[in-house]
Image (tube, rainbow, N blue to C red):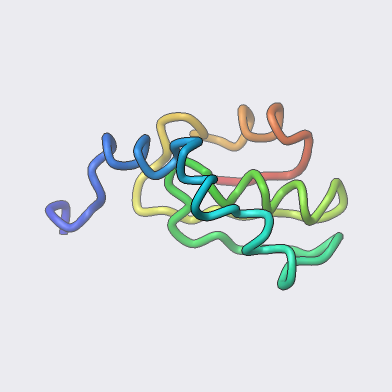
Length: 90
């Protein structure tokens, strides 16, 4: 199964700020996500959608990320919580 997992270097490419020019996560998620929701982010990788989700659900909401392997930048949600100021669990 390991040969089908996305390589780590590709995660940095997918989380690139240039991607936001073509795929704005806030614009994509805003019609479906409301304040105080609990959201499951399957395969969050580097958190391209996780942090915007956390901002959309607000301080009373929760974002739970489930991935095949931990993300090098957000291992336990602590650094994600510091960046977004909201509840992100990995």
